[in-house]
Amino acid sequence: MSLGRTFEDDVSIVLAGEAGQGIQTIEMILSRILKRSGLNVFGTKEYMSRVRGGTNATEIRVASEPVSAFVKRIDIFIPLDEKATSHVKRRLTDQTLIVCDSGTIHPDREALDVPFSKLALEIGGELFANMIAAGFLTGLLNIKIEIINEAIQYFFGKKAADVIEKNYKAAKQGFDLGREACSKHNIACTVKRNPEVKNDMLVNGHEAVALGAAAGGCNFLASYPMSPSTGVLTFLAKHAAEFGIVVEQAEDEIAAINMGLGSWYAGGRAMVTTSGGGFALMVEGLSLAGAIESPMVIHLAQRPGPATGLPTRTEQGDLEFALHAGHGEFPRVILTPGTLQDAFFCASHAFYLADKYQVPVFILTDQYLLDSYYNLKEFSPMPPKPKNYFVQTEQAYQRYAPAHDGISPRGIPGFGQGIVCVDSDEHDAGGYITEDMEVRTAMVRKRLKKMELLTGEILEPEIHRADEEYKKLVVGWGSTHPLICEALKRKKTRDTAYLYFPQVYPFPPGLARYFQKAREVISVENNATGQLAKLIRRETGFEVHRKVLKFNGLPFSVEELVEQI
Image (cartoon, rainbow, N blue to C red; front, side):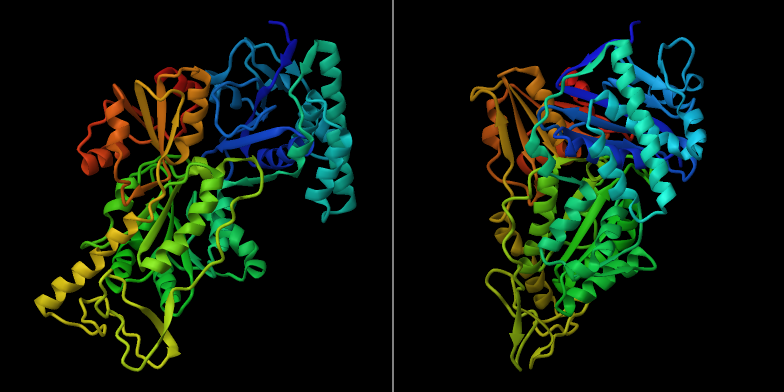
């Protein structure tokens, strides 16, 4: 195998090694260097549930055009320990350029030997190997050394001068080795640069959800840390002062959702962020929100279950959980964003829906969406300025006064002269406990009547079609969206359309027209049973013809979907 390579338009770079080897540092610095140099960037990661050891891998795609999806293909691979190669061996081909210390690669694979560890020790310690590797890649991609130095100053500017200087030295040494490798082994990178890209945002899913919540007027967050939702908690905690948000790490998830309900009762705008196991503890609080007709925003970041499952991997396994959680019957909304733009918008929109209709609203994401990032223009259109839907009460105020549309005016304590009485037991118009069966029936009907109004607020599915007379229709929700889009773009077929659901409940009406036109309808889902397909059957009576499912903890790759669709 010759080491010579020419990388055109789209390069998939994967770095892998043990937790604690600084892979995250390389990823953060390198992705920002690439964007600053005018290259489109997409990144995602796959990591084990341990602080040290195991094998973690991160993929960074560098492309001439915007990219937002995971690919199986590896063009350049840097293993930082001997276990890394076996971890990704199914993704390696004869065309993969492997760059590593000679001791970290199996002898039957040819690799470009770069003594990262030896050079790092000469500079000041093994940890500098990651900066040498980052420098090597920038040299390989022919990025200006000034951009690299700017990034080092940005990330390490508050550290001691000698630490900054050693990072400069490590990056420069790696950069020189990268340029030398290009000339010595005939390696070239022709990915086109766009000067406008350097002004793009580079955000991940955690940040998109958090920023959307802030734009929606969130001013209180209560949560207990749980992967993969914790990034939303930590981001808002870091920026709490500038966003005007009170962030509380509760003692558990039960306390968190009840704090959130207390905030809404007092006139705040609250969100909780959690994952499946944590949401299981919140279900009684969810039912309380249904009973007292309280707004509530719940960010549910999915990961594989049941129980602890694979706590750091991805899955779309909690749609049915969010749909059916709680005892009794009460309205709810489930939003399922598939892009960072949609994650921002849905998080903002959730506060509007929760406040106006006095219902719990779910933002359903997953580990893959949250840990992925890519460059994009500013979020637009910006959501309207948040509006509070509570009223100033009069002395005769009744919290659950009869309303033709099911929405009783919501008062808050101290804002007006009325008493704002809420109770988890069934209650009368004033909020006081009752066991009167006629009142019970009227209250249930009043709450459920909101579903008619919520149907008018649905985020409509997006139809992507190459040809008006398509033969196949792919349906998907959430994080599979960019993957399906790129797979269909690669297939270059005009007989396949795609229907994307950014909201799955209330279920959009009138979809039969899409299903009936297709000879074959295919659902693509990161779960074992096809939960969207089952919801489609429940709501429309239509049986999806074929399901493309994956549930091993990893996202689909674009190549898998090209093959299976």
